Amino acid sequence: MTTVAAIDCGTNSIRLLISDVAVHDGDEVGLVDLERRMEIVRLGQGVDRTGAFAPEALERTFEALRSYAKLMREHGVPFDAEHVRMVATSATRDASNREEFISGVRGIIGVEPEVISGEEEAELSFVGATAELEAEGDGGGHPRPYLVVDIGGGSTEFVLGYPQDAGEADGVVRASRSVDIGCVRMTERHLSSDPPTAEQVAAATADIDAALGEAAQSVPIGEAATVVCVAGTATTVAGIALDLPEYDSERIHLTRVSAERTGEIARELLSMPHGRRAELGVMHPGRVDVIGAGALILDRVLARTGAEAFYAGEHDILDGIVWGLCLGVPDLSGDAEG
Image 1 (cartoon, rainbow, N blue to C red):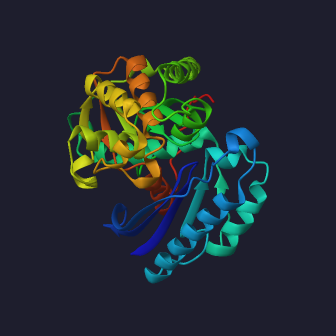
Image 2: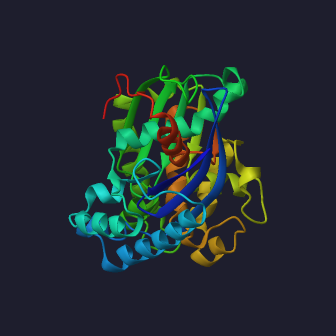
Image 3: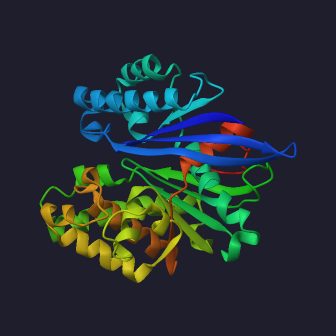
């Protein structure tokens, strides 16, 4: 038994997963979650406009990371590269002062964050999102190929493939692509009114559709038999579809939401003022101002794929990072294009 920690720092949030890793019968690996935490820090605040991290965004992120380091010490996680992996995604790729961020992280948790490519981000998300489906046997009734969609704050990742088991290296990812549409980026770029005007929504929709066209040049997203959407936008939309009085990850995980209902929710969110969105029981306070853009991206993704529904996944890149720490990340890249 050993304990490992995965940290995912994106444009909007920073998240932690601490897991116990147990090996049974010599090679069968079991994971037990000890902590799953998420803080909205908006690290990507203004990066699309300025090209640099704002000082207050860096401090919010470091404050959250210090609280995560405390949890890691409480669970006995060694602060080294064999037991801790932190990945940093879209905003960090774009920021001119990213060395300030990297240095601050190193001082708090002892390891440097890895500024991973959008393609690696997609592949890690794919492992995390599909491992449980495969563990159910023959996809658990979820037909292949799987398309995993990770809607973040600054970018959205797509990966299409036919996985085997997350602990094996013979899964096949056919293609992956990251495009620069995310809930923070689209909100800052287009949706300035509260609620946004029809013209602003139309401009955001055109931007999203253009990016989806770019993604489709690399990833045959229309071939997906099962669409799994991960991260906060998808799980929040699922919670709204379930009419939950508060966020409940167990209820939300692998909930099926129809494309029709997704479109309805997107339109409802885009028509609500900030105060009304904040009253929704499943809504995290840090997601109130960007959920409309995220739901619009999700709606356009389903329209582009032609899927009848998506499954909301609570397991994602964090789980993929943990699998990589305990087994080595499978070489899933295949012929993936970026």
